[in-house]
Amino acid sequence: MQSDGHKQPRMNAAIVGVGTLFDTLTLAALPPEDEAIRPAIRQLIADAIADLPSDRRARSWAGFDAAFSRKLGEAGFLGLTLPKAYGGQERGPFARFVVVEELLSAGAPVAAHWIADRQSAPLILNFGTEEQRQFYIPRICRGEFFFCIGMSEPNSGSDLASVRTRAERTDAGWRVNGQKIWTTNAMYSDYMIALLRTSGSADDRHSGLSQLIIDLKAPGVTVRPIMDLAGDSHFAEVFFDNVDLPADALIGAEGDGWRQVTAELAFERSGPERIYSSIILLDAWIAHLRHVGRKDSATLDLVGNFTARLATLRAMSIACTARLAAGDSPVVEASLVKDLGTSFEQELPIAIGADLAAWPDEVVSDDLHRTLAYITHLAPSFSLRGGTREILRGILARGMGLR
Image 1 (spheres, helix red, strand yellow):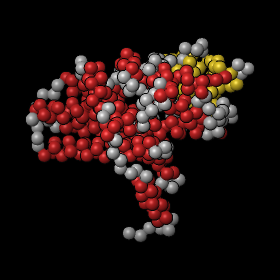
Image 2 (cartoon, rainbow, N blue to C red):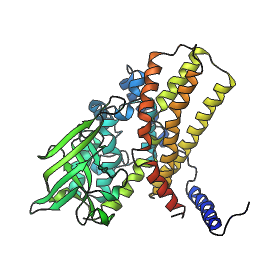
Image 3 (cartoon, one colour):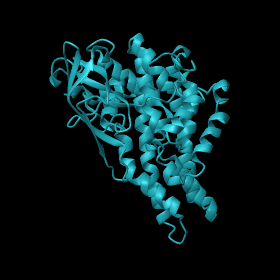
Image 4 (cartoon, one colour):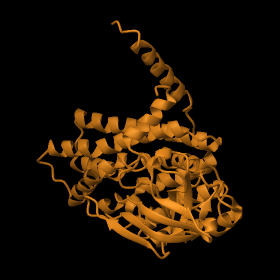
């Protein structure tokens, strides 16, 4: 097949780009010393979820249980990668991978500590002052301080560079005005790390952005929960009306917010959390198949397809973790894992629902029905949180040299 002279170089660039991208994802294995963590974390999780039905365990990300998070902190399962000087365990990203995988695959309630442990503490460690490290990180490691992220805004979506919420300098520090939206668990959190414009305008894009720590109990902060399609309210919109912050609320240097955020999102996009959002439904469906004794070839092919894709995504996620362990920031590779992982998570409820509908004479438990309904309602959000599919594919295109 012939092509014109303009399209052929672009196709070659795409092929080269894909090859280069996958070359950076070298297969890796979890070290034995990190695999050894599993029995202890599994026991702690088993005690926490013993009485939870599948549809409640499917709410793992939204399951806010402060007491369970404190137990994780007491057992040393929070702050795994952080220095012991700040209350951490000084282990590598592989140890955290094991703990997160166990939590999500079992459907444990992780919402309380999730953001503080995954993003806020590493951000403060890497960019914060020594005073900020000493104050916040030990309390995060103990499961005492809970954080939310203030990135998205109305009319901005995943285009973080267009944020308009401002922090103006005052004699005492900063004054914040504006609004954040889709802020997970803001109504339960102690602090928000917010991406704010400290100079210029939204037209300046990446320049003029900074991150500040906001005490959500400060005067002028209003938090309003947002109910989702499944009837849960773990999202919130947050309003700032002349909120005064001290000078030391700034993280790192003024204007360095974009660099901080892009590094931070590598933690959010590359881990097992982008694979297991529908895993409780998959387990419940397979348990149903065993219960009814269905072993036809089409069903076995479908189970095999899901299993093979899950194994591949897990291997890619471990490869990204290996990059993090080596001190790299795999922004492009993490975007690839998230894009493919959330697509898999979204396809599961559709395929499982179609399968159950094809066997109308099978008795389906109420628990499986509720779990399927919940995941089906929630699935559209999987490709929104942490960056929309369009934004991620833009990152991938740049990484492949296509834009």
